[in-house]
Length: 389
Image (cartoon, rainbow, N blue to C red):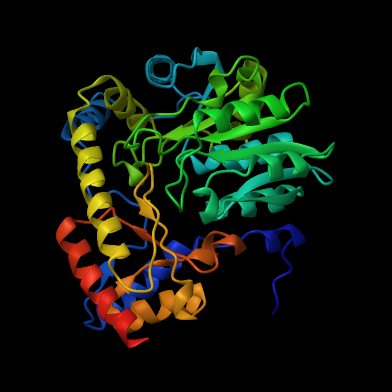
């Protein structure tokens, strides 16, 4: 019997990195050695003080329902953090806590868009952007991030794509999958072209603590943009809390009320003990985060040099996150075929560039959220593999 699901379900698609992870795990179960560079998950443990805070909260009985918008102490801590680190002046009434930052993407599209609207999103970019735009009924309009531009936004092209139907523009800084960065001038140029046009910016800042040079401003700090910006952030990447499922959005007070209503009608609330632990993450020692960023920078620098030393591969140096996006087009294989064969023949799991959009063809994504030792093994296997193609 064929299930009669709603037509809108056809717009949703899987996240390829998890599909590749499943394939790699199957090969490992068969006894094959696999180096995992496909998944965007820090290989560091959640800092002990955060774990202790969650345990303490549970021991104190903080295990029940919480307000759908999030507990006030956490929202106050997020506001404090946003002021100190993002330079965004906000308060608890403008913050919505969600079970994972993906929910902020989903809720933003449900809250702001409908059939006939258009949403401009980065391509190559995080694949769930395209998925949730389609689910909302809006039309996804790709914003090409090209290697020749350093994977930055082509401001002139973006301006051409904006029209009366444009409702939201998504920016991700630094970007998954390229690690590319929008510079201050890019941020201000985007703000200038959307100001007074009734266009919202969904600013995905989930990697903004993982930057290896000068930090560009959040677009919410540009004069006139705060009320038109929804900041997406969370705890998964910065604090190595991927499985804790905790994110948040910062937006104007009226939008926060609407997003809270979406929380009421879906997840109800984020887990209580996780929220109390997040307060410790934001206000506790940051030493482990500093160490993690230093380790990622060391891995990035090694990997860029090693990849560019392999004949046929060229790779730009990313400014942030923990990904590289090497160009493998010289080998005459599609991105899908290259990544498939690399996994099956060489035991290196990587994501195909087209998993992040059609502008990712000719590239693959490596996550360097793995040890330096394993990265060296992966490079040796990649070098051997490339010589055999």
